[in-house]
Length: 228
Figure 1 (tube, rainbow, N blue to C red):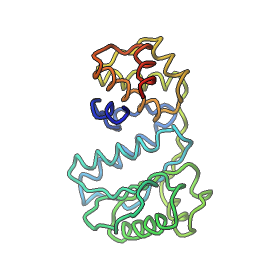
Figure 2 (tube, rainbow, N blue to C red; figure 1 turned 120 degrees about the horizontal axis):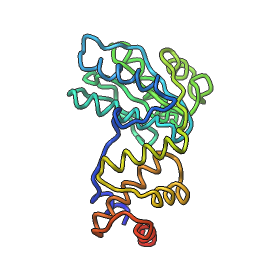
Figure 3 (cartoon, rainbow, N blue to C red; figure 1 turned 90 degrees about the vertical axis):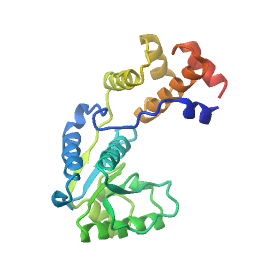
């Protein structure tokens, strides 16, 4: 059922505009500049940027948002996360390299990430990466770990509950979904409060509501879970 619901939902990908920065405003502003500079190959800076923070702090959202911003400008981007079992070789056509969840990389992924990083520096391509801890504390090969800490490093803070509510409300509004206060309370108390999990839940609920032609209510969410 989950896959069917996802297929029927309206996909709203992460964007820089939809990111509620809260205490992470400095990182967001930096990435806005970072992404806008990629529009001109002449102005590309090879200085890397590394984001770190706990799960739910918005690291993957920001990385995916930057990737999409670059793609909208016609740029190609190399992407590597822990789910990529066989990373491809570095491509000189890439305008940037994005490395997500580096703390989970296998030895093969670390080898690929280091190779991408070195080639990106050689060809003056930017590198954007993220992990769950500061570069110095990463359990990675030394040459990769030190390179991740070369440039700009930002720690992301997990949003407070009022801020998570604001993000959830904004995402629902973008989908044309009305979330009453009781529904919002139910989602925040009965499910993971991790922001990524809440966004996934909203996508599932939206798809199920479209499928069943019903409004988003607590009974609808319970029905969705019973039929999952």
